[in-house]
Image (cartoon, rainbow, N blue to C red):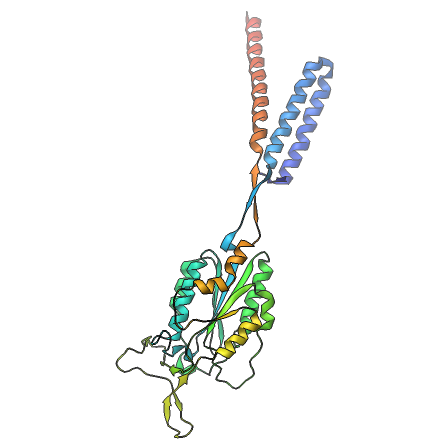
Length: 344
């Protein structure tokens, strides 16, 4: 049993003490008037106790249910470097378009969960903190675009590590009862010659998720994005591509970006999640299944529902109150009769 007071304790307790003290004093004074008078004050004490018990809101467990998908914090980390503008997703679409399609599909499957969105290119940015508003998440995803070509400083696949760690650590501290999923979406391409940091420290905050890869081994040219409303596909009459110097001729030629599955699989291994090649597109059911989302939902902390018992106390309280009111009514009638006799 537990109590869910309808009023604050600091109001209920003084009311109870003062009420019982007043009733006790009146009952003590009426002890010379016979047992009936004393019992009347006992009845009033019981009425007061029932009222206080109702206000305290006693309740007992009435079953449990799972909080479902609301028990999940889901963080998406999306590569928005220039190479995600390569048009080899599903034969001719941009890699980023494929990533956005999967983001929306997973969000629809996980509707009700708390979704967060991080992007990374030259910098890692929190686009959307955890929210259960699917509409806000959809809007954030639809506005994603890759890094402006003029500001690109190359690809570093470990760029979001610190921000991911911070977001998941904060989630665990604020909501320890929730499970956390991490989805890393990218092509795995590292163009800067630096040692890639390990994602393994993040695994302590992650209960599931997946690393999703986009691109092909053969690679593709990269559609240039200048931030001026460029076309998101290569279907325009004269598409502009990112160029790079040819080592032999020293002339600028279109840069070719290739999928690095080895790097993505290593990230997945460090995070203790599954790697899935998503370059062919298609339904996201397999991703959802491999992410362990359903298992975490089923194994989530159960919510106990309570049945309030105030109504069982309200019935005898109403009966005693009616009895008291009836006695008071008879007393008023008798007083009026006595006053009438005096006037006669």
